[in-house]
Amino acid sequence: MSNEPSKPRRAVRRQRSIYQVHYALPRRSTEDMATPLLTPCAGLALSAFGLQVAGHRKTEDTKFTGLLQCNGTVLKPILKESQKREVDFYTRLKSTTNPDLIELRSYVPKYYGCRKFTYKGFEQDYIILEDLTQRMLEQCVMDVKIGKRTYDPLATEEKIKSETSKYALCKQQYGFCIPGYQVYKLATGKLLKFGKDYGKKLHGHMVREAIRNYLNGVGAPLCRALILQFLSELWKIQKWARRQTAVRLYSTSLLLVYDATRLRDCCGETDDALVSRSKCRTAPVTRRRSIHSLHPLGGGSFSGQLSPRGPVYKKLTSVPITPLKTARDSFTPPPAIKSPWSEALDKLNTNHSFEHNYEDKLSKIKMNYRALLDELSSDTPNPNPWAAVKIIDFAHAFFNDDDDDATVDENFKQGIDSFVEIFEGFLKETDSQVA
Ligand SMILES: O=P(O)(O)O[C@@H]1[C@@H](OP(=O)(O)O)[C@H](OP(=O)(O)O)[C@H](O)[C@H](OP(=O)(O)O)[C@H]1OP(=O)(O)O
Ligand SMILES: Nc1ncnc2c1ncn2[C@@H]1O[C@H](COP(=O)(O)OP(=O)(O)O)[C@@H](O)[C@H]1O
Image 1 (cartoon, protein in one colour):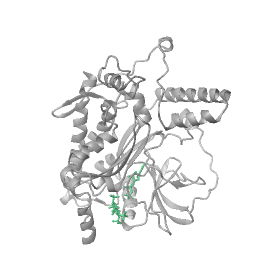
Image 2 (cartoon, protein in one colour; image 1 turned 90 degrees about the horizontal axis):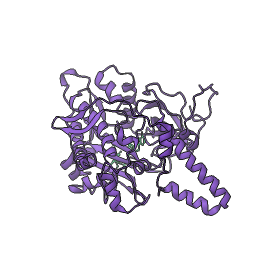
Image 3 (tube, protein in one colour; image 1 turned 120 degrees about the vertical axis):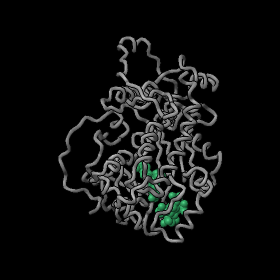
Image 4 (tube, helix red, strand yellow; image 1 turned 45 degrees about the vertical axis):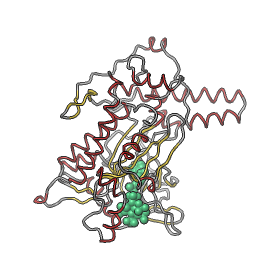
């Protein structure tokens, strides 16, 4: 099979959101995707995935070994034996009846199957996965490889040696390492990228600082709503890792993603100087509260408090709806946003007539508000997530089929515990934001 258009199928018509229409994004799927799409990329153009922060990337004369993208999915090439194991992993996860593995399904990207595609004249097999960055405008992505030990039981002496020597200090000290990340800085809108060479030098306090930098928390306070979104997912993964005995995960990664555009809206710059920015963040009375800080977990029930036994949850009532008239009267437009989008808009303005600029600006403003409305009126139980964390890369995952050998995967668990601890420290730093 190739990515040529197949027989046209009659699509079920569903209303597209304004986000999808204006940003040409794929439809939002509401169900937990266990059913693979039959032809998610049929007839559509493939391109190199520009948001890959780690992993195989070398382009050789014969084959492109990096990820591709298409229609809200990423395509991961299957070249090595270990990558075939990853296909087996996803296939088995899809049909499993084991409760630990069923739960794991919600912590990994949606899997749409595996098929052949032709890219740059070369046909090869690809795993098709949900693109975790889809619908994000300024994608901040961090790959965190979990475990002191990153080689599997089938590794050769040579592989054991090379894995043991890579990121050695960081893995010893933290039980994880950081092969790469990218972040859009809130203050400048600039994209910064940090690759493997940088990641391999990280150790000691630099590790925490790298994560802080990823969270846009260097030179500015960390955003509590962002930390909470990550922690709510991390705690679930941690709870699972402490209990599960079904699988051993060597060299898997946590993939953290968030949208800097939404962070700016939630905890970002006001028009004033940095001083008022930190005031805005730390003084809850004067701080503009977005829907995310009201419902930081996107519908979850974390109270914002940590007890010695972990997160304290509370019952949530529905979000109070402001009467339309009050909302209209108290309406003030949001502050100007400095980002690649605003820069693109500025460029556009210098190239067109005033009249055209005016109309264009107006339509952009409309588009932003309609997108916001679209999100606020969403009827999904998880209305506003703009940060997520999933486990990826299962080339070295092994199922535990022998009940007698059913023990917790300490290597994975310790790495997760250590990563969660860093985030809990960050959460404490933001306690004053809810004082
Ligand atoms: O493909 P390469 O040469 O970049 O090496 C991969 C590593 O890149 P790096 O050495 O850090 O540049 C890569 O490391 P990162 O995860 O990118 O740090 C993996 O170790 C990969 O092994 P596997 O596919 O997980 O078994 C490594 O693949 P193998 O060389 O083990 O096949
Ligand atoms: N589902 C996904 N959505 C978005 N980005 C992804 C996804 N899977 C992988 N990536 C990107 O590709 C990189 C490499 O992915 P990974 O599965 O670890 O490949 P490899 O086996 O080559 O190491 C990740 O660091 C991330 O940037």
